[in-house]
Length: 327
Ligand SMILES: [Fe+2]
Image (cartoon, rainbow, N blue to C red):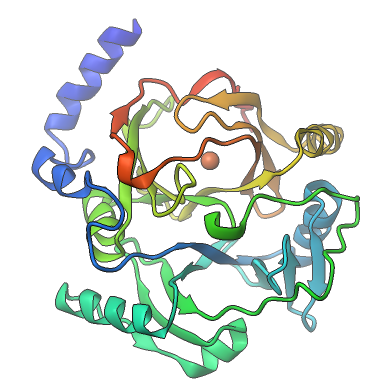
């Protein structure tokens, strides 16, 4: 089947399913960040639950090169920049992301966002105990339409008095205003998910890419931004018990990407080969962490100007590379 005919088949099938957002819903999301009075600023942190906690922590230290801190017997936290932590892994059965922390600027922004979500029918609940646990000043949490716990927060703990201690001499990751990186979420209700992240949380569409996976119905990726990172959240319209497709960390130095690739190849843990994405231009590869959690290690992703961005569509996810390994 040619690419053109495959695309035609996808379009015809999509017309009879709810997999693809309808044009009316979609057009509402295709506006610039800042057009709504409130918006999240970035992806601040991720919380995972993994069965093999020690193996997960060892992979993070030895393959990704992040600083790992033990928290009792059943949790570890990972630092990648001046924040006290960016990734937490807890011992548990799910082998998946269990919470995503989305950062707002200040207390008034969190209050405005809570009111806005309530008007849209989503109750975000303040939780002082969870805020203390996460090391943030204020936190309010709710669920996204696929059931992922979303923690809206401000006032994270900075530890720039304590230099990052990467075990492999890593040059660091691109964070700051762009946040931790990005997460790609699988959702059985892509229209509702897009509405939650765009109309609810103030994100905006970057672009769309159809996705063809052998043995699966055609699906689509929607890429959403809330700062200059090309996408902070991407939504994959696909029902799956696991919510996370992958998360991404972006190296500051190309050599750190290359060295990580060497290490992951030697550990036989490459999920997709080195390649460059069409939409954000990220040079990257994908690795399988213990528990089947996939991480993309990238370098050189493009930055967008949210107020000047035009939504586009790509037919392929990669310009070259990113050849998937069958496991
Ligand atoms: Fe990615």
